[in-house]
Length: 64
Length: 266
Image 1 (spheres, each protein chain N blue to C red):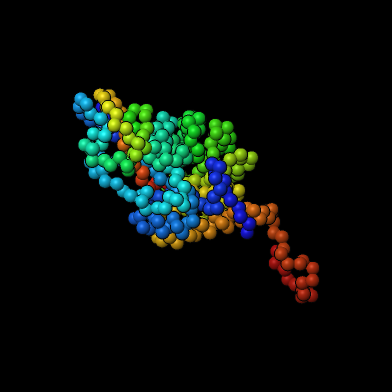
Image 2: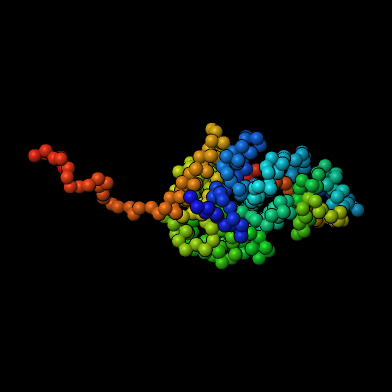
């Protein structure tokens, strides 16, 4: 699967919560997309992930 | 002066200066400058979390969002598809349905793609977003974006971050003439007189980031821009004089105590 544009190993039974924990990301401060599903950080579901999923984890930064 | 609210997306705002949060040296300076600007609508960007160093950067903690309205952008997106995706990520990240839509394939001048912008605007408006598209000052495109359901149109003054000021005032005038949604001049304003000029011509508001963030004194410049916007709006409401080709004396022509036979140079 692809996480933030980089290949990431997909292990059997991997879930979104487990992925964020492995990446040391606090869900409360991000938003997440899995393919075409978009989740606020506070409502990230512990859904199963599979090979081929495209995942984006984003935050808010200064901009104009 | 009477209350002169500026309505955007169904909400009234008293300030006609929108401000960006990019390029400030630190959050403290940004917070002070934004306070001095009086801006109520504040833009932010959406970026991937750095997975090698996922610490948070605290922009949201630095500002009082009870009093400020968040406007995320799709800066950096090169195609309509990228912009639509980033808009949906922005909605998830911020909780607002407002989006400053930027579709910019050109890195040198950061000029927006009109075709991609219109396509993305149609898709996002149909998905319930309050869409504020960044475009060239093109009246035909502005009307098409209105028909697509955009809440405002944001024509550029000059390239983003260039500080060159309003380079195409005649084109801005054509966008303003008959506009059915607020027109917010965005990008390229360098000094408060640029903002005043846009408001004098009838723009509803301006968005400023680099000119404040890169000033020697960002807090002072933010205050100056607030004054420029107020002056420009007041002048627009007051109605400018008609411009003339030749001079028109301000003092009475008859009754000058002349010498008997003055030598008048031609």
